[in-house]
Amino acid sequence: MLWRLLSFALIVASCAVADQLDDARQLFQQKKYADAARAVESYLQREPSSVEALILAGDIAVQLENPDKALDYYRRAYQRDRENSLALRKYAHLLSEKGEHAEALEILRRAVRSNPRDVYLRLAYGQALLAADSIQAAELEITKAREMNKSIPDGFLALGDLYYSQRVFPLAKDNYEQALTLDPENIPAREKLALVYFRMANAEVVDNALANEYYTRSLQQWAEIIKRDPTYARAYFEQGKIFFYASRFAEAAASLGEYVRLRPDAPNATLARWFLAQSLEKIGKCAEAEEHLQFAIHAIDSVRSKARLLLARCYFDVKRYADAANEFRQLQAEDPQLLSSTLDRERYGYALILSGDTTAAIPVLRQAVDQDSTRCLTIYRLAELYRARQQYDDAVTLYQRYLRNCPDSLAARIYALMGTALFSANRVQEAASALEQSIAKDSGLIFAYRMLAATQKSLNQPVKQVIATLQQGLRHASSPADRALLYTLYCQLLLEERQYDELKSVASSWFRTDSDRPEAALYLAVGYQGIGDRDNACKYYREALRLNPGLEIAKKNLKQLECK
Image (cartoon, rainbow, N blue to C red; front, side, top):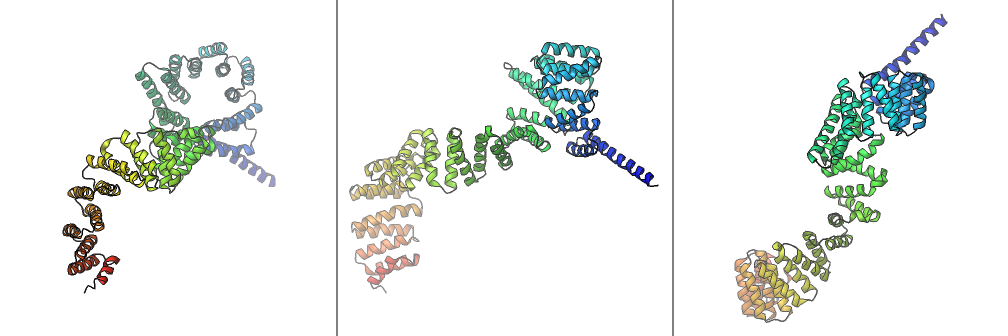
C-alpha cells in the first residue's frame, strides 16, 4: 500500500514538473518572455538535463536580448545531445555572433559531414562561413543548400545575408522578399528586409527622394512587424533610431520609450535611453527626459557631458534654475568646450541670476556678449546689472555696444541710461551729450529730461538753461509720476536760488494739476513762506500733512510759524 502511494506521488510530481515546461512553452508563444524565463528556469532546477527545456531557455534569452545567457543554455543543450540538430545550429550561430568562428565552423563541419542532406545544417554552415568572412565558401554552401529545397524561406534568407554582407543591397532585398513570399509570417525575413531598406537609404547619396522612399519602406516593415507582434522589442528600437535620425523626435520618443519598457535591461537599452532622452528634450518633455539624462550621465562615459548639457537646458526650461546652474557649473569644469555656445552661456548666466548668484552670473554673461555682440537683450540686461552694482564704466561700454549693434527701437532709452551711468561715473560732459541724444530720439522720455537738467546743473550751466530743459520736459509729461519727476527738481532748484515767488507760481501750477501730491502742497507752502504769506503757508503745510501725515518738515514749519 505504501509503495503504491509513493508511486502515485512520484507520478503526480512528474506531471507537475512537465506542466511547468508546458507553461513555459505557452508563455513563450504568448510573448510573455519574462514569465516564460521564470517558468523554464524553475523547470530546469528539477530537470537540468532536459535538452528541450535548455533550447527553450536559450530562445527566451535571445528574445530578452541576453545573448550570453542564451549561449550558455545552447551550450548545455549541445553538450547533453550533440546529435540534436536544433541545439547544434543555435549554439553554433551564437558562437559565430560572438566571434568564436573556429569553434562554430568545426561543430558545423562535422555535422554536415555526418548529415550531408540536412539543408538546415548546410545553411547554418554557410552562414557561419559568411560570419567568418569566407565569402566564396559561404556562397557555395548557401547556394547548394537553396537548390536542395527551394520551398523553404531559409535558403533565400541566407542568400540575402550573403548579398547583404557584400553590400549588394538590391539582390539582398530581392531574396528577403522571396523569403517573405514563401512565408509572410517570417519575422526574421521581414526584419532583414527592413534593415536592407535602411542601408539602401543610407547608400543613396544622389537622389534624396529615393532615399526617403527607402526610409519609409524600412519604417513600414518595422511597423508591420509590430502589428504582427507588439512585443517584438527590436522593431521599436530600430524604428525609433530611424525616427531619431530623421529628426522626427515625437515618434522617436514613442518607439524608444516602448523599447525601454519592454527591454529595460537589454544591452541596447543603454543606447535606446540616450536616444530617448535626446528626443524627449527636443520635444520639450523635460520632466520625462530627466530620468534618462541622469542615467546617461552616470552610465555612459562617452556622452556624459552632452547629457549634462541637455539636462541643464531642461532644468532651465522648466524654471529649476538652481539645478540648471549646478549642471552648467559641473559642465564648465568637466568639458568647457561644450559650453561654448552663446545661447548656453546665456542660459547659465540667467540660471545663476534667477537662483540668486548675480556675482557669478556677471562674468558668464560677459563671456556671452563678448562672443556675440548681437545678443541685444543680454547686453542690455548686463549693462543694467553693472549700473546697479555701480560698475559704471562697464555699463557704459555695454550701452555703447548695444547702440552700435542693435536695432534702434530702444536707442533713446539706452542713451538715457548711458547718460545716467556716465553722470554717476563723474563723466558729466559725456553724460550731457548722451542725454541730449536721447531726447532728440524720443521727446517723450521724461527721465532723460530730469537727468539732463541734473547734469546741466552739475556743469554749472545757467539756471535759465536748466529750467528750460525742465519746462520742455513738462510739456511732454502726461502722468502724475512723470510730472513729479520734473517738478520736484524744478522746485528744488528754485528753492536753492531763493526764487520764492517763482517757486510759489511753479508749485501752484503743479498742485492745480496734481492736487493729491503732498510734495506739490509742501513746495507751495515753502513758496508762500518765502514771500512772507504766513496764512497761505500754514494752509498748504496743513494740506501737505493731510496728504502725507508723516511729513516731518511740514510739522516743523507749522510749529515754527505758530500756525493755528
